[in-house]
Each structure stands twice: as C-alpha cells, then as structure tokens.
Length: 300
Image (tube, rainbow, N blue to C red; front, side, top):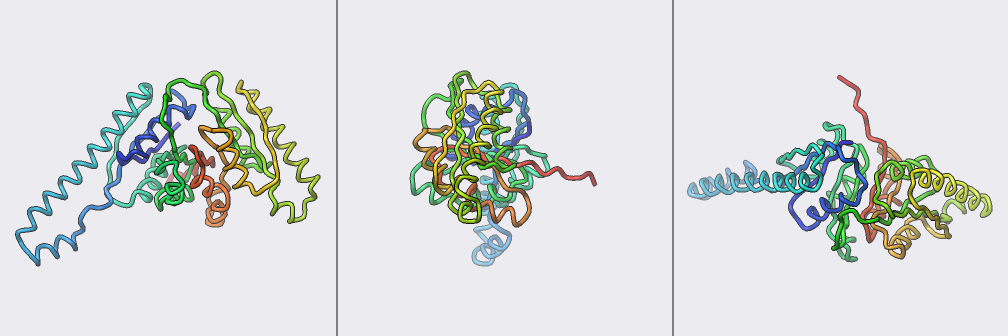
C-alpha cells in the first residue's frame, strides 16, 4: 500500500501521524511525508526590496535559506516520527515549494498512492467550519482515497477501534465496506453500518417500502462482508438526510473513524461529492476516510 501524508508540523499534522495507528494499515506500506513551503518570497518581492533598499537583499536571501531549511527539517521530523511508529514501513521525506494542495495531488499521482492523509484543524465547531481550502481541495480532487484525521487525546497503541461506514446500496459505499474489511483491526474492534432514508431519494420516485427494503438488503450484504473479516458488526438505519444521519450517529456512537464512499474522478463526480462525503469530512467529530479507486495512469 502506498500512502502520501501531508505534514507541516502543526498540531493537526502531528495528530494525523498518531491517528494512523488506528487506521488498520498493513505493516509493510510505502509512505511519503510531504511538507510544502508556501510562503517563499517571490522574485518580484526580492526585486522590489532591492529597488527600495539594496541593504535588504542579504536579509532576504538569509530568510529564504532559513525557510527552506525549516521546511526540510519539518519533513525529516515527520519521517522520523512515522518510521518510529511503523518500523516495517519504507518511509521517505520530501519538501517542495508551492501550494500544499497541488503538491499533494501531484505527489499522489506520481507516487501511485492508494491513500492521502491530511490533518484537520480540530474538533470544535469553529475548527470544523474552518475546514480549510487545502483539505477541501484534496478531498475533492485526490486521485485516490483520502483520510482526514481528527484524533482526540489518549492512547492509540493496539487498542480496539470503533468504526462507522455509510451504506446506501451503491457501488461506492460497497467499496468503503470492502476497504474496512481488508484492514487489520485490533481485537475487540467494532464496525457500525449506517443507512439513512434519504428524503430526496424517497421523493424521487421510490416508495417508502421499496427504499427501506433496498437499504436493509444493502446493510445485510455489508454486514456479511464485515463479519466474514472477523470483525464485530452492527447496523443502524433511520429516516433523514444522509449527511445529518452520519454526523449525528458518529457523535452518538463515539466513532474513531467514519468511512464513506466517493462517487468518482470526473469533474461532475467531484462536484457531486460535496453534497455528502466532503461535507461529512468537514463536519464530522472524528476522523473521516473517503474511499475511492485510485487513478492508474497508462504508461507513456
């Protein structure tokens, strides 16, 4: 499994590294820790400084060098922390100049990543509202699955985890269920499969009974997949919009991570994802993993 991790040495980024201990990941992953330098002084700024005062040129050059050194040190620190947490992983650090969201997307494409990991700003309502342009962009445009980490304080080593998966009967939600079933969870971990009687779907032509029957069938199939993987499983279903039901149940269930399926990779798909998956990633009280097939580039 190949993973790209955005790291800027903030509390959210450090939490994202710790959160990976609860992700059920294999013991032999290839991981890249990527740190972006977004505020490098531009040539235009340096030229302006030179015109205003030639004495500023030296200080600008020193500041630029210092910024580059700092971003390299941050990437190396993230690599060290990740390697200590996962001794069997092949970990490398990279530091690049540019906008973090574009660098993460490009690295995921070039690396052939299966998962991109980014930190969130926190658990508070204000933090979730201020989800951030980088996180939102990566969630919507990554060529693979994305994990938005929100880790509360406490021990993360080898403890059971509480997982939730959104199930709506689509192929995309089935991929989320399969992703959970394929991970390696500590003994005692639990999975709750959650469905909502989406009002929009109900008004779109399906009868209440037919909609309910479809969701119960999807939940039963998903439960079989999780149970076959040896993980304890329960189901939950109630009327409401999918976004609201998932968010409320994640809080009530005290989930460590909520898995949801993404629609796809096309422009239309990326616009549609905002209605549920991206909104859940922004507002959930826990870590959210948005599951999608990775884009495989054809050889040149």
